[in-house]
Amino acid sequence: MKEKLQIIVMALIGIAVILATIFYALGAQNLELSDLALIVIPLILVVATLALIWDKIKNLKAGLPSEDERAKKLQWKAGAYTYYSTVWIAVGIMWYNIFAENLNLHVLTAIQVIAAIILLPAICFFAFNFYFMRKGDI
Image (cartoon, rainbow, N blue to C red):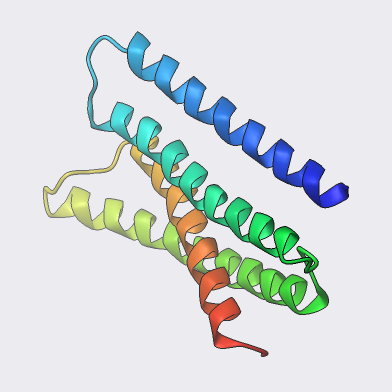
């Protein structure tokens, strides 16, 4: 019952994010690159979450538990690696802006930096989680 409730809640949150994104896109007068980032980021996160929901549904139909100790351990490891990568992503963005100012390149705005710091760690977590799940026991 707990697993079914988790699936329903995750699906409702995904639908709410998609609806909010659609309303944001419809209300925007002129879409710029930063506006597109605010539309693309939630959609990518929802698609990745749908993959997790699909896996939970598949396990539930097969009669398997949706989480076990191995999966929890691998998710914790993926989370730790994501934290480390987030630190380096933030440092890399900072260094890019420093070099961009000196070399007269495009300097990232605050919205672009925030979008990168939200999107890239989320992609890293899903990639690490996928890799560790496929790799097997660690």
